[in-house]
Length: 215
Image 1: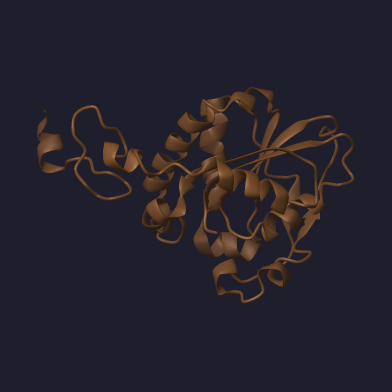
Image 2: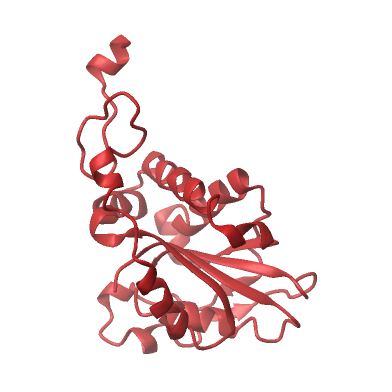
């Protein structure tokens, strides 16, 4: 054990306990509870109604990652975001259909929110996934044209995200299998209005992956 480990021990990003030998990023106790249930993934498959869904994957139980995710998303903790992205990539490497994905597209932020926050948390995660999974990432397919308030502040989440996206380009996306990613899925309202903009792209296949679900 080095002096750095003694004075600055690595801790679990979820519960904060000190990691022991063999543990990386999260402790074994959290590892036993963080995974989402497959039944919930199937439930969301039927909630995404604006497109034919190829696959849906949800990685984390929001109850376990909420503190870490908020620190990354709202607290500027990019180091923690990279750790979350690394865990997510390791998980997706084990998903059998991931090898069929041609392109990763993160849900975009409005330019005003991007300027205020300094980064799009979904894009940060997407770039980590792209590098570790060796799948190209694109951020110029769809843009957010309305700066809607956060979903957590909205009483009607479907009205809050109505028509907030617009298609920027469709060239080169024909017959592709695209993975849409976001940090959290709640009602699926954002996802549905996002993919609604992609309807005019011929023969586009869509799969979805979320870091966590808050439903």
